[in-house]
Image (cartoon, rainbow, N blue to C red; front, top):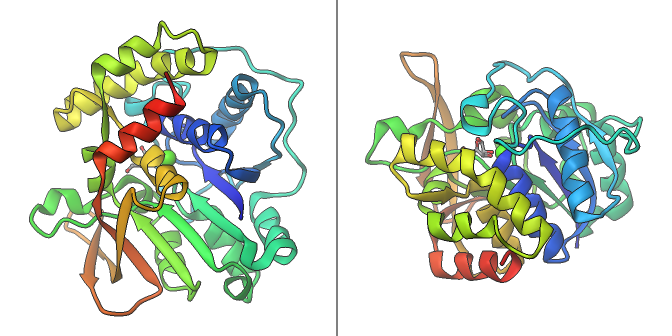
Length: 299
Ligand code: BDR
Ligand code: CA
């Protein structure tokens, strides 16, 4: 299977990309979307990530605008998006001329069933590709999304960043009949965490990539603690990637997802489990298995 990773790096995006590449996912391209930080800033981050990985995977720029909201999350990811890990721009690395949406469309023609689109940020790029090519869904069968929320008991947690930043795009993607859409929710992303001590120790690892991850993680751990009281690295995007590396990490069940605006104009995800649907949402996950995959990769 070939993969396109659509991303807004972002600390947990960066770690997710590294987890995927180190576990030999056949990534044919990265497409950038505005989310955690604007696209213009995250270009630099993607180059830094590839410098550390020593890869030359092609990079494509998405639209600088989301379809609707323009919200970013520097409070969680730092001003530059990679926490306190600050590096110069590697100007030798260049982005391709093709846009993110055109790369998604052309890859769908080339690889058809053998292509999965992994979306780790707002769904703007995939939505733009759907708008441009009305038959896209017939060729791309598999879409994996980190986004949305499924927690019937706590109204606050109905709001999830990636969906809330571009609800118009999310709605279009959820209403497009791709054969298989898997959604890894916010709840899984925050209950799935790597212990603080382990992350701190990574800063002294003999492996450069692990040291980089340990450094970046410091900022996201501050956010994880302040927002969720978690002593460690909450890992929404890495958990989504882990669900591909090992299918036992997450259990998915068929559902319908509806977006509803609340009184503060934020976008709630209302999820109903059903017996049959092309959309499947994460309802359970294996924390120990996720940690094992993570720790086997970064030590
Ligand atoms: C999502 O929002 C972003 O901050 C993370 O990168 C992740 O994709 C979690 O809701
Ligand atoms: Ca992300």
